[in-house]
Image (cartoon, rainbow, N blue to C red):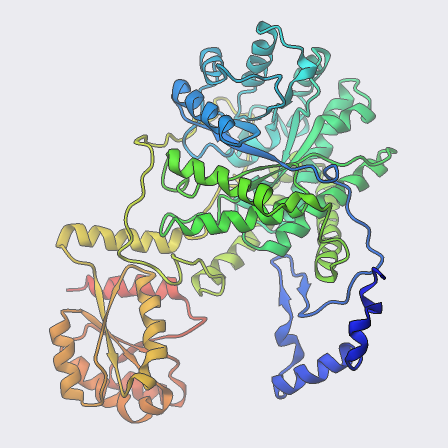
Length: 622
């Protein structure tokens, strides 16, 4: 039996086919349209072809040990250390293999987190056996003291430091980037932590100690290549800091690990994790070292979380963990599905934990090392991401390193440029956010979170370095603000703002566009009231008055619009509609439609956020 699929006897029963044969079939479907219509592009400008050949000679990317599962990390971020401890013990008893201690003010705290003092750390870790193959990861803010506090607890318990699996998470560069300020200058941004690392290392801790955190860029709306370049630039800065402490590069490279965000773009996430390993190997080679696999910690992305229809976040997290796991992540943390709403409760934490357990224990995702190896599309994305990220990394280095690049705004300007394009695509619903920008549910039930209000991080006193911050965003925020506006009107007036769908013709004529219009308006919190259909302008006007809506939207086919849209618009205007929309483009009829009273056209690719914001202006004009 051969292992080469090209030699399978089954293939002999079919006529041979190649790319030219496929292109011929595709050209027939395109009917003269350019083939480039099928080529996608990432936010880094990388082309994604519709089909790829198998990458026959690709080798697996060295990562986790064969068949080794990634660590299932669970956030410990309750401000009450006793409750944080109770949650941590439940997590460990229920399948988690590691704890991510999140401290107040850290990059990923989102308004919560443990206090950075000895009592809080000791209480949170009470009953946690630090030498029992439990992974501990620290997520620090501007204070590095928790690293020393954890080390002190290990010493007080009489545990050998080498028996502990602790990633200390020192990341002054990432912290400064998010805050837009630092007590250090650009040249020493990553350097003053080197002495602490030396102390921890000499105490026997294995590390790693420094975290090169790409979430900083991802949370701010950046691209995959930008995230990777930031990790490389931060990692190299930490290498220099360690070398300045007299630590040999052979030892120093094991003191650094990477953090990446994992989101719903399955293939790009998978390629991104694979790319980081290749890129870091290139850094090691440039240092004269034989490459060793970098430890990579993944976390499901903050920016993809929605406050509306939060249960969809469970699906987002599943895709993200799948991609990170197959991409070779050594550890993964899932942000519970209610994280954007507040501090998650026990149910949300359980779902986050079980998402990983199902993928590992039931789907067996860790059984195959680098399963994407040889897949043409993933291999191409990996190589292209490496090239784009390396070029940006070189640009950052030429600017004087990551500290100087932040100080001059080089990194921020590039991230802002990508964010602007991303924002436009979200506003136009080209990038779909299920439950927020598309397929909303205005009657969704509230979900439970802990009854604690988030606290804003304290500003840095006496900052010696300030620059534009890489502030975290959430992609759904624009649509959610409109939904909040709708909720406020519901609470104040007893009903939501509404739009009357003035359906013309038969159901076959109007259903498609009425469905589109309903999703369009309800994404902004404006409830859609369906008309019955028909072509009588007087009946349409009566139905509009009975609906109680202040605005209306004509819905039908272009064929029906040609005859019925103008009289229908005039009837709605006479009936008192403050603003009339038409689902579709105006085309050759636009001038006549506008003259009849059509004020706006809603269509796929239009600026939904702007149109919906304008709708509120019309709704509140009386």
